[in-house]
Image (cartoon, rainbow, N blue to C red; front, top):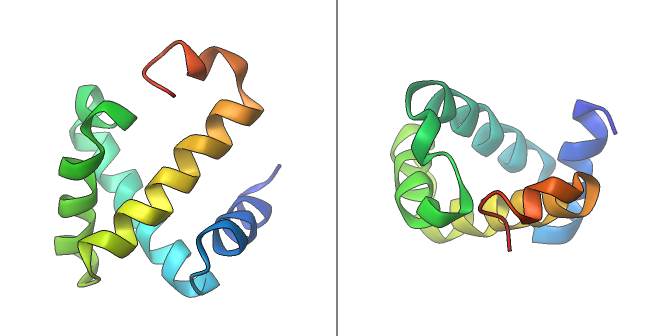
Length: 86
């Protein structure tokens, strides 16, 4: 699954616009680079809040998209279930 397919799948699952998902994932990528140990489902609320501040979107929208992202990761990469996934 390439980047565009991932974004489109997140838009489908979350019910948000593709552009919104793109913005959230771009901000999450920056967050993850700077907070590697916190960029996991276990710290979802903190990550969503940081992404919300970066994008200007509501935290609940960011949390929804990130939840869908972590679910997608767990489905596509089996070991993610054991690494702070579901």
